[in-house]
Image (cartoon, rainbow, N blue to C red; front, side, top):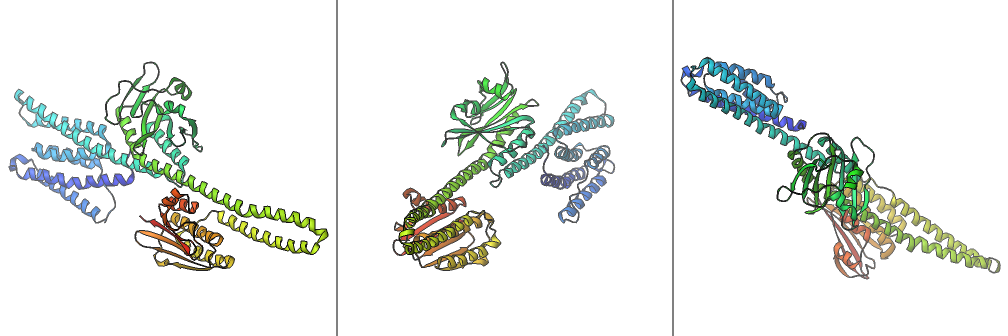
Length: 556
């Protein structure tokens, strides 16, 4: 796994800053030794190397040049030259450890180990050539070789771990970025599962999620290379053992599922190895046609609620792969939980909106149409006996139909999708206020602190919907003559207030949205819209004297 461009730049800056530090250490070691023990021109060479490192660091720090790192072959050539210039093994080690650090970051651990072996052999050959040839020195040679190789390999290992960590963090951030509410659950999960199939080089990925409220198992299944829309299977709880296995805390890897199998795993809570590994039931194994499996439990709210399964890997999976999958699932748990939660909130909001529209049609237009039908039947019988009364009745019915047509047109207009942005919110509110005054005949004062409004588009959209629906409710139910709407924002919140002098609600007092839910009172769709943006709804009612609706949405 390779780090992202931003992470690579960060690692290259570490190499740039580390180079002069190690050169200073090598120079200090040389200067404290007698001149005869330093080696010919060793001090001059390290000084020039240090100056080049400092100049390069300064130029990049001042941004006079871009991210132009010294190529690793330059440092390798410098190391080779310094090996034959200096007599100090310690000074050479400082330069060597820096090269091992740079190689570990740029090349990874395996190639760096080869480099450590070559440098160790070169140092041993140089020591044998320039040192006395005696059997008593063999122990010193072995110690020197072992120490040189271990120091270089260890430094390269730490550097490669840092490189791997940077790449893993970038990958986790990338996966989190794929879980977007606007994409929807299905598309977000398709992108995430596709990335996991690619990284673990397997044929298929499955995410199984248990919904305790519905008592169902939802299964998202993706095959490698499949870019079609992802739709979940809705299965009964009886299928839970097949997808969730029979051990909710087991992290399991089977490299071979057939026969006795070849697998390993542990309890994710305490890390203890499992003696009896959970396996896929045979019917499900045959249905999926999986030869291998790696699987980790997914938590929601601190409790096991699902499982991620990857099948038919094209390589042998190791413990480090299972640990990496555990890290991915732990990282994805909170954003997945938020995604599912928002999905539920949206579903409730949609149901609330459907209920509101159903009530409006039933209590309004449908009742009017039934009344029109009855009156038409009466007028039909009067046409011959009392034509003047029939004409007057028809005129009245015509006005009724016009009124209901206008109301139906308003409902259709309100149901159209809105694209409200921060820059358009005030204009839309003012335009609707003007239309509301003309159609309802009510006095409306709209007070907006437009200079301070800086809101996300999604909050703007829901606030406008709440504002529009509140005014419709006032016009239809409150029997008010005057409405005052205020909208303002400070550093921490945005507040919308709708105040009328009508009859008020059927209750008296001040209640929050949650309290209204418990009492089964208040405007349902407004409560749901307020929750969808993380806001708090408060309703104050004084029967016979009006009501006040306040919506507060925290920012940041």
